[in-house]
Length: 376
Image (cartoon, rainbow, N blue to C red; front, side, top):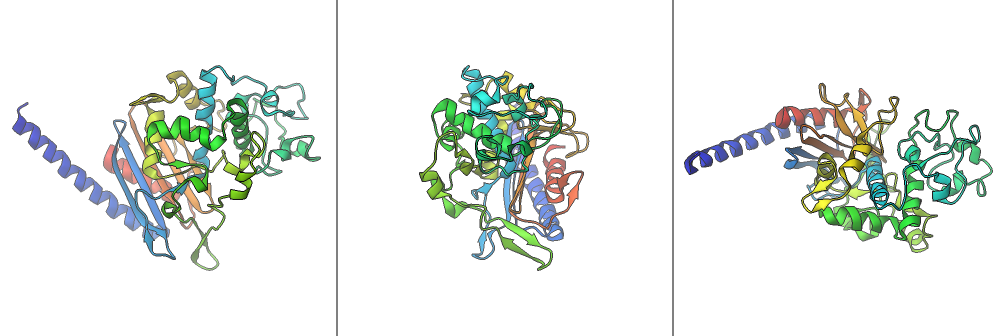
């Protein structure tokens, strides 16, 4: 192909991308009006490269600050995958095993009293098949420690560990503590040094380590008042608690289960690593084997692997791997397809809530719109 033909082809592609972007933005703006959305950040990946990012609406309603692609969100439960990715690094380093007794790792007995002879493993904890539940809360490890909580038995469901599924935040706050015990490195610092920094991503679990001017205020919609109300606790820095942090014990102050703060573009960079089975341009964050383990479901009930779930309900005709998040009024989604090398990230910092096939309708409509325009 001659240089003139290459130039014409490149120009045609550029014109097409501009037209696609305009169509996407028109549709998303209309959807935001219909669904009552404060702000929305999106990123589209094709051939394992980011081909489109955009932000709509407001980062802060009261201050009149518009949302940008550099805005940072608390992404809620997608954070679990960062914790699991960290664990897989330690598995590869042979410092830990997915089949280890979790009691040995955490330093106190983790046993379902209804099945005292069944070992609860790290694999069960990461896949929500452990039978542990959040009924006593999950912001302190003491709730499940028999020496600290007289009601510790309530932290377990009725199914035998490994033979059922129940989504549980405590699983991952405990896992964060294990990472500290094994590495001797503070949880947030471990994730930063071993995942975020290699990928060149701005983000983290520690509020005071980040640029607060970039935080997207998170809003909950009040049906009674017909307005959005800022969630003041969404970015609680817990500065005093962190100053007095006890390694391997008070780790939930960082919320390994839901406390990652990151932009949609940053999350897309991280997603590409998983879509490439652990690889990035500088090497590997985790091995292909570890990546496949994370993406392989261990429960038909939850279609859940190790902090990643499999879904064919988000986009008709596509089987996707990823995770959603919801907290304080925020809703997020990160889903990708390894074989077809595409993925989509959507984050909203506030919307009136409706659901479609188990997904927040704002998330699902946006994902499908971006898929139809940029991928399909």
